[in-house]
Length: 327
Image 1: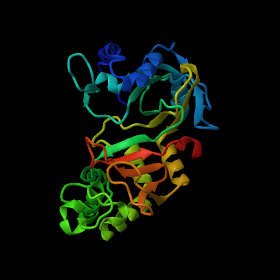
Image 2: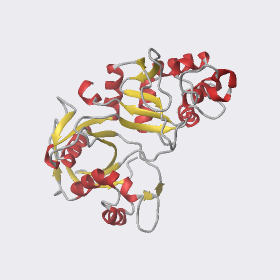
Image 3: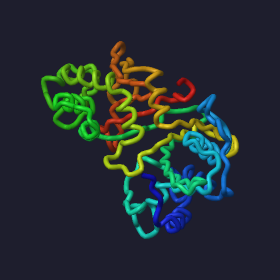
Image 4: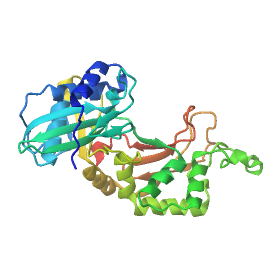
């Protein structure tokens, strides 16, 4: 059932008052302001994205035209855009938006479009946004979690994960109690990072199970990471908007646009589950010459241990840099 904001005017007022407060939301904020300022009724340019998912132009028009085309709409009576990031910083400290009686506190959609069709129907479309402000595309973070939470996410969506597999993933992430440094005999003579096990080192039963899970369930897992990363998310995204690189102007911004279904299929067609060799060349625990490790990959998704100083044991999933040019 389509959802529509019951406090739309208040939400828009909050949004307008928070524009520009957080740089991370500036791109989404600008798109929402421009969509809400468009003259209505609005007629979309049909066929956008039919020949290529990577296109240049004004982001608000490219996005709206793409969504309308994929929904089979040409002319729409009205559209209201909301930026979930901006709404979470409202003046009264409210960390949620109430939409159709539902309190939204965590949402995978960065933008929510509520479209009124010419027949009076309401359609709500969630948009997950990614952006790069460098001259050349970089990796885009897709999901950041813990080994245990990732296992819970899979189990909650019908993908079986054994305790052995969960423990193996905790070895990969370096959870306390699952590290080489927790077992003194494993430290003696170790030349690589003692804070975690690399993929080729985790328990063999768990490793084999994970490789089967990713190979057999690639589409389902890719979809979860793109769309349903939060449990009970009321606005799981239907589309992905990716600003590919630094733009010379708003009017010449390059975007990659996909429906979730399209991106899942293109990712699978691009590649299945593989292990890519790499070596640690930076940081306190650089690999000796000739030592390499296995990095799990499936489609355009890259999986790694976070390793950041603040959250070193988090499990991180990224979209491959420049994937939109390759798939």
